[in-house]
Structures are given as structure tokens and as C-alpha cells.
Amino acid sequence: MPTIKLKAFTLLERVRTESPVVHHLTNWVTISDCAQAVKVLGASPVMAHAPEEVEEMVQLASALVLNIGTLTVEVVRAMKLAAQSANAKGIPVVLDVCGAGATSFRDRKCFELLDEARIDLIKGNASEVARISGAQVRTKGVDRRPGGDGPGGGGPEPGPEAEVHGGHHRSGRPGG
Image (tube, rainbow, N blue to C red; front, side, top):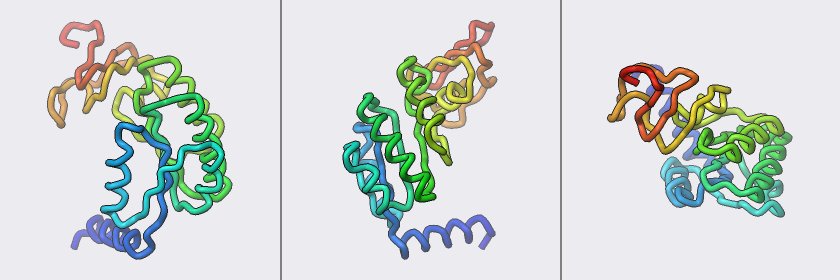
């Protein structure tokens, strides 16, 4: 068995043996899917969003997942409390920057989370991650990959002036 497959198998077996709790403060649209994915892998999901309990809930968790897809000021407050508690505990924090680049509110809240807590992994599509990295891109929808219609995409990557929209990019350049 190739090394990467063996490593993946070993990690999956470890998850199934230990059944770690994964605490999510996630997008209301995908909350059920997130819980099911974690359960299928053998972990135990918990979806606690109340600022009054997130710090305590993190103490039961082995990882924290934050998703800004359905963002409110109250949810961000809870995310900051949970992330700071996770940092103090030493567990990984994942931030899904869903919709970053679409509005200044989302951008501000992403940067606040990044400034106020240690984020171990940022998840997002090309335009979202580019925006959080400082590029001047605008997200208009869920894109698979700039420059293509299918999962493999194609074409040039967008430059800093590009606008990513639903799997396509518009740069103002010919062919863009």
C-alpha cells in the first residue's frame, strides 16, 4: 500500500477509534451536511453557537470549525470566544471564509477572527482565499476554480484586479 494511502488509513482508523468531538460554528445552510460528514468519518459533531456556551463546549472538543457563510455580529462574537478557548486548549481551529470578498462586512469579520485568534487552517474557494490573502478580488458566488466551467477549470489564474463569479473570472483583459 503506498505511503499516503497507509497514512490516510491510519488516520481514519484513529478517528474511528478515538471518536473525537468536532465543535462547529457553521453555516446554517450546510449544518446538517457538516454533521453527517463528521459522523461518517467516525467523529462526533456538536453544533453549539451560543456565546454563553461556546467556551465550555470547546473544552469537550478535539477541533473547532468556524464557517462565516451565514454571518451575524453575534455569531462572530461566539466564534472569537470559541477560537480563543480552542487556542488556549491547543486544539486546531479551521476557518471557512465562505463568501469572503463579497461584502466589506464579511472581509472585516474574517480579518477580526484572524487578528484575534490563531487559525490553523483556512478553507475557501480561490476568490475567498485570495481576498483573505490581501488580493483585491470580489466574490459573487461559489466558484470551483477561476477560469473554467468544470471541476478542473482551466485558463489563467485571476490577477489582483480580477473579479471571480460562479466559476468564471472577469479581469477586464481580453479573453478574461
